[in-house]
Image 1 (spheres, rainbow, N blue to C red):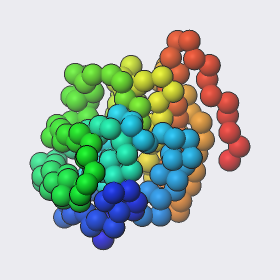
Image 2 (cartoon, helix red, strand yellow; image 1 turned 90 degrees about the horizontal axis):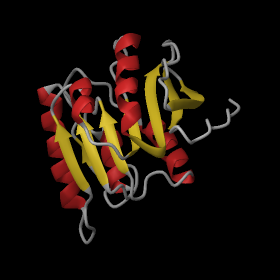
Image 3 (tube, rainbow, N blue to C red; image 1 turned 30 degrees about the horizontal axis):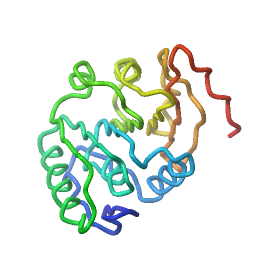
Image 4 (cartoon, rainbow, N blue to C red; image 1 turned 30 degrees about the vertical axis):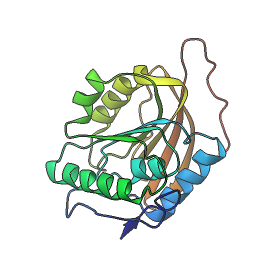
Length: 200
């Protein structure tokens, strides 16, 4: 069972696709959003959830105050689940103006090639069997869309190598949670210094 952890839709149960996706565990989502809120990276943010699956990461951000969320999911059944979850989140927003949430039922590369910039927070949670070349392509397409000091969170298998970071995205740290590894990175524009490396 997958639930929204906090915010106006806290405890809302989300539908999950029957197959083909790997929902981020509550423990890992809680760690992600604890760190994001510590750096004030969610409230008012424009959020991109790539390989969205059920949309749990993007919708958690929406519940916690993001201004705009785009869920990108190629698999049609999963995209339909995202739409159902978006509708459920909107119903939970009693007395609260819900953020703008859009579901894009197409490939991540196709979306990124035509998307507008200004992304403050990007989640990339691809299937573990996605090749490193494809992930590097996605990151390269994402980099020019990021706002200054945007945060990027990549979720991979703990057995996967570090992503190949393109110009414009600098790694900050790695965190391991059993079989799951989170790679944290930040946007660095031409006038921005790279973030200092952080201890493990």
